[in-house]
Image: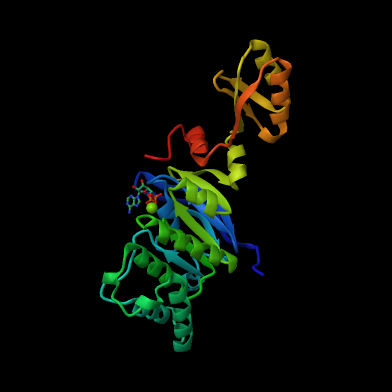
Length: 314
Ligand SMILES: Nc1ncnc2c1ncn2[C@@H]1O[C@H](COP(=O)(O)OP(=O)(O)O)[C@@H](O)[C@H]1O
Ligand SMILES: [Mg+2]
């Protein structure tokens, strides 16, 4: 059974490029066996965060520990514990998949037996077994991506960072990447997954941090983030005759935060489940009929707009 203890701790991390505060005091933790998504638009600071945690660049301030080790300390040991799939696919056209994996295995000082075993395993999970002797120049974008991921996993890291791994790959390859990421989680690996796709963050990750201009502006499970934004659920309903007394009746229902509009009437509330029957009763008591009723749960997009005043989609 995978342990669920904190494996990655980031505290008050800062990294600036001149005037640009790429990472501006972020803090978060990731447990073993957890997918933590960093969701943010272009320029939010996602890649910079990954570069710092991969020890490629040094932070200006703040702390980060991986498996209890300071990232400024034993860099070799940190590199052994973690694997990074960079945003830009880094594979060599003239080499085949096998050669890539063996190269990474040797670079990590793995034994020949270990390299052989791990190579076989990874070719299988990435679906590259049949093409392992073909040069990478003949691969599709999705295959290159999968190989890139396999290279980062060769030394069996316990913390894996994936920087927008589905950008530019077809839907089928995307599904395959999701399956690989979920598999890693089930093996008890801590995962940092960056994306600018809300849907990915929402259905792939256990926890989400929304990042914007170097800062984390909301963090938690999907439900927690929605409540952080103070964004309740909305019940939309249409009735055959809307009257002022009905509006007042609905306002008085416990848990109702606001009533707006007429067609449809939008009732904002903490939890739709608790007020639905009361709304229907109020409507029929006022001699009207419910023609349509629908519950709208806020999306991450709604939350992002609420918190930043801007849309996540550019
Ligand atoms: N090497 C660099 N030199 C100067 N500015 C940089 C460099 N790398 C990133 N930046 C800037 O830092 C900010 C964060 O970038 P980045 O971490 O790449 O964001 P994201 O990965 O979320 O798109 C952006 O404003 C970007 O232009
Ligand atoms: Mg990036």
